[in-house]
Length: 181
Ligand code: SF4
Image (tube, rainbow, N blue to C red; front, side, top):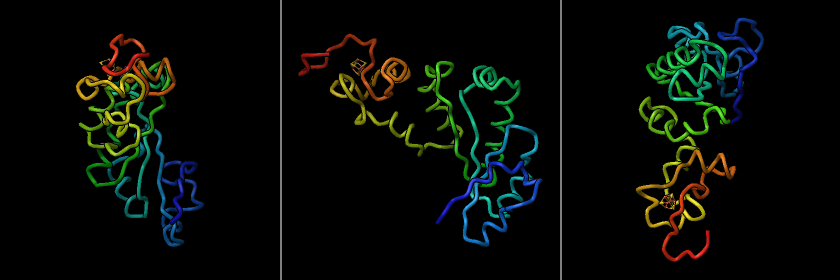
């Protein structure tokens, strides 16, 4: 079944055009990407769900407001995003979290894992499944007998190698059985 993102339509579809109801009648699954404003209230999210919206997508760059708000250049953006997320959870409306990874937050990626698990959101997202799975580690970390208890600093691996599963470049430990870095 096709999935349609109605992102260009301001929440809650104020411009008319292709509505969730009309899309649902045509067999299309609809999602929304609301901006972090006061518009996506609990009541509106409920109406959106009843109208056929199956998922919302939210941008969240950090587990705390400072980094997220500075990057988005909108004070209060993090709090509003979290409110929308919790409202969606309260009515069992699926929520997808989009994280822009760059210098401003790469070191916070490992902290995002317990954070999103705590708020019970996208624990099944491929990125975080990877980060939780020591068997996915590569290089020295992948060969290391301590990978389950250590695993290396994933944010640093990503920043310096471009692959968050690669060896932690700051670790000098040479795993047993490996003779090269
Ligand atoms: S090599 Fe170092 S950083 Fe990598 S998993 Fe082993 S102990 Fe951790």
